[in-house]
Length: 162
Image 1: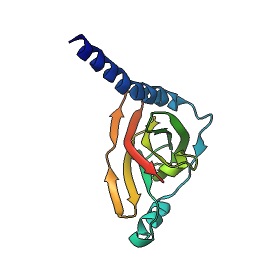
Image 2: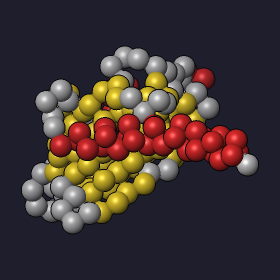
Image 3: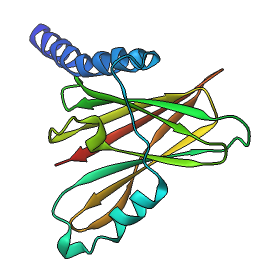
Image 4: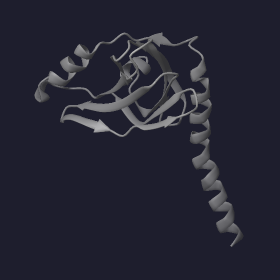
């Protein structure tokens, strides 16, 4: 019985480490010190989707942000994490009132092939959506959103670029 408890505790600690790394990374969304500004317009997503399936030879994830307010620009800050919960890159985008902007997972990975997750935050009314662009076609991905008192947190649990 004691061995089972030790094994269970060890498993819980092993599972908790990536979550702690993700939470620590999410807290660091407050800074833009090493983040790159991404200025992708909706046309770039349309172009990526229109690539014929036989010609699409890579996988990327499009993170699409829609700003619902009609006044003031929104800033969305994101951090990309690898499968071990370690940061691989930071980026931000500015969204006009009632506008839309896109960040690709490849923008966050600094040219490295990554399967992981992305955490984003904004102080405005922004909604995030995720789309996997793969050789087999385009698929929507789950996005978790939490509205806090003065901000919105978005979590894209699965993103890939390779």
